[in-house]
Image 1 (cartoon, each protein chain N blue to C red):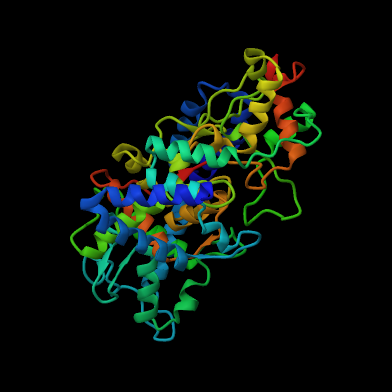
Image 2 (cartoon, one colour; image 1 turned 120 degrees about the vertical axis):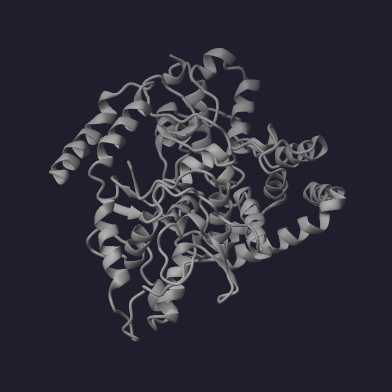
Length: 206
Length: 268
């Protein structure tokens, strides 16, 4: 059985496991699905396919802001780990200067964005990175001195590339997008952001 | 004088970000907001909305003064503090904007498409009658305690669906409303984010919409707030007056119960 199919079964089991409220729950779920279907229209580059959840999105929606059950969390991490494609050339770090531009760029994938325009990671929306940028958000942890604290070994590089590529592989139901898996950033862009975090010359590590 | 004071405050607001250090920024923004409150341009929308409410318009050439917003035909005072709610004539839970469209259709004879065609204005180029009407009606609930009912089965259903939608993750970025709005004291860049899962957070957020957005030169309604959140979530476009818009509004408005309504407000 494919990992995603197994995760689907676990999610179903979790719903049915609620027994007393299972009927209410499935009725509300059906009404919610109907409301979603009737309430959005395609605009710009955002089609209705964006409302079709994969198993990770479905399981994490069901968790409703809380940590998912341990077995579900393990399955989410396992299935997402299997999606990570490491660079064929073995080079995990790119150019930190490009990485900084990508970390600052908030545009990309919104229906109001030019589909041919830049697509950024908008890291600063949620994380502190370089000391010089005061306008940073706090949804995610501070990444200031990320590389200085962790070193620049191949293991750390692989983890960092993988975390940006598919964050759900390491923390089930994290708030962080899956930049590589969902096709938000290219492989080169992920290398550049990884360099921003790990290059000793990057302002993040000053 | 009011306009002058507002202009001075606007200049101050534009300079502010470069001068302020991290820690005090939120406090300083709060001060500027307080200064702006004195000359809130939202009053222009409220005034235009009141005139539109009383004006004989549409194919039937009647005013909206017999429109039932939930407290009886023509009662505007306090009506917004009890919306969304179930309306038997429409057999549907409606928010204010949806109910205004209903009255424009049933009383004034507009087609639904005509009534809904311009929900969000664009400065002076394209003024929205619905925004102005919303500004007027909401202003008549200022100071009134939020008291959204949950007596009818469809009201309870809308609340449950709204809660589900709040946690619904989708799109390219896996975002849900909850991604940004379920923890206390978080921000995006320097923008503070309300935690909408607590009564206090929902109250503070919900009771301050509609708002005049300084950065946009427009009065924005709660339906606009939802529309633009979904845009940033990388979802497709939320349909005005749709079931999802009303259900989410029901979830948040009901969570805000007990707090005095305090809008149209002013925001950065």
